[in-house]
Length: 249
Image (tube, rainbow, N blue to C red; front, side, top):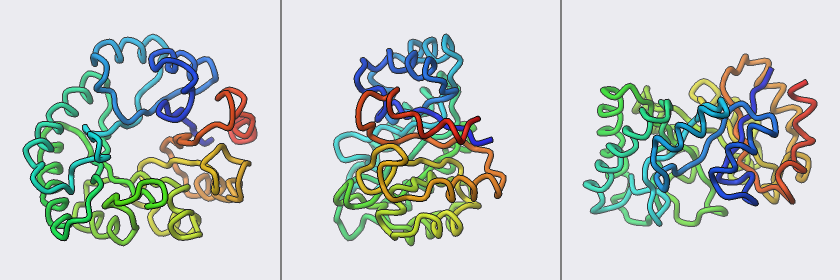
């Protein structure tokens, strides 16, 4: 059976952040993800997650206003400091997967900076018992984001065998028009799946994506990971969850 987790950066936004954890549990979710825990004390978040028995699936290293700094010139020191902070939160929150966001940049040296920072991350995280993740994010949603096509992701995954892929099927559909093909090509390196319908980035059933086929593929391949609901509900979050019932019965 497929496992769906709430994304608290997108869902339950009608509530203050800490209340979203309780709301996700009440709605039947058994895990959560959110990009930035740093606005809260790690022990406070850990207590809330434990109270509702919700593991944290993944979060991001400090990203700043540029949606990450891994590919940014002159930010190497900040990047390494951010990894230390991320490692501390990961241990406190019991989460071993940390998304390394590339950031928004158009500099010619971005590729070299990004690869150098990833090399450092891989070594540092190995010592910490953590796994770095990358994600391809479409330019339509985040103009100027460096990691914005799957050819770049392919290079990173070939260069760094310990790096995992967050495969957001919405971004895959926006970039290629064929999320199913991207899933087939990158399945072996995918450690976490995210979903939203396209167009609109709302809950499944509001766009044109064939989630029945995509979920069937994941089941047939024996996918054991979580599927993050990284969509913008068209209304109150709990009213956007009817689509999930056939896939969790």
